[in-house]
Length: 142
Image (cartoon, rainbow, N blue to C red; front, top):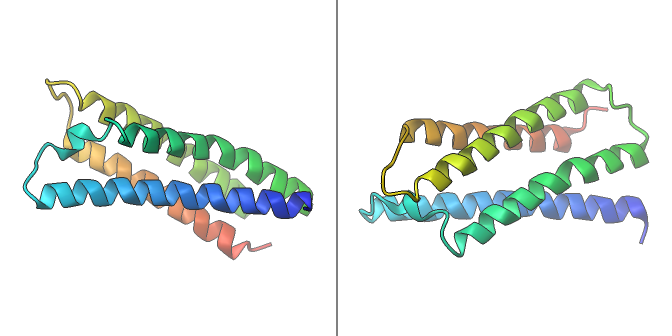
């Protein structure tokens, strides 16, 4: 198989896994909250959900590497505006995701410290960043 096609498949699969994992966590928490369980988010770092968080982290580590190789094989300049914007969005999205993972991990403790509204804002900001990146990559205004 050609390297470019293999990298494209890897990049697409990791992106899909990242979105599916995020969507699964969101649906699970929303369903639990609607069922009346106000502490459902406290169990978001227990098994098997730790696997989901680790899979999301692995996807976040793989995406910039495979993306860089895709740009390299396609022969695009890294100075293009859409690539720079995607890189900046990725940096902010990945950092907010990491901060979110730390905050959700703290929810496992009996004493909850912090503002749950801020945790929700981090999750929404991270999701918006990654959706915007997917839009930029889909449009590819080369």
